[in-house]
Length: 300
Image (cartoon, rainbow, N blue to C red; front, top):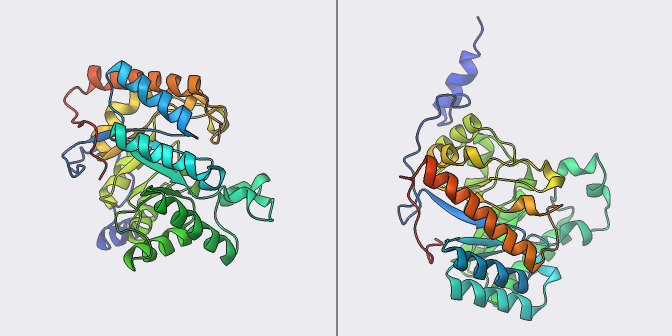
């Protein structure tokens, strides 16, 4: 039987896994503080929703580590960014702001068509790169240090800006699931371009996730649930195994509350997202209680 041995052998020769890891090996990699997992709540679009989320998290006695805004830096006024930065500092969480919104700053409408959606939110033309750079400069000046990116070229140039001192050296870059990556070789490329964490495609299976972990060292961001617009599926029972095979991992929780990826989150929505974190935490406590997490303030 032809088992594609030559190709698998070559992948191993260059340091890649030879296929998906169906044996689901336990990851021994960790965050710098020793944790296996952290919680991330995506789609928190402004300071009012962020405040409601963090207050509800505190009321539940939970800890989250990262809050992500997805509508775009351009849609926030300076005072809103400053307020979100202040909330992040007060509650000891990482604030991630999104470049863009790219789909509305370009003259092309192709990304809104069934065919064009395949390219995700990648940038068209060098002027779009310049505008993305300006987004990051502005938000960094206002105190934000973590950013969501959708384009590999943009990631590369932002890493060069960081390396050359154009933006603060402690800026961090997270690659969105909308970039459409889901294999170890793609993960390796993104890591080499300067990614500090990678969100693979939302429906990545456990054996695929395990092989991705074998190829890279940076954290992997995985959706435990999804908005209706991206499938609406909920993976809470898989979370213990996600942690075991993919650590260090960010558990992106609360997305099922939204109808779409860029849903304009209300304060009530934000509190509901906190409840989703509580539900996922129950799964961890019951089925993988030995999994290691840490308290607030550990965002590196």
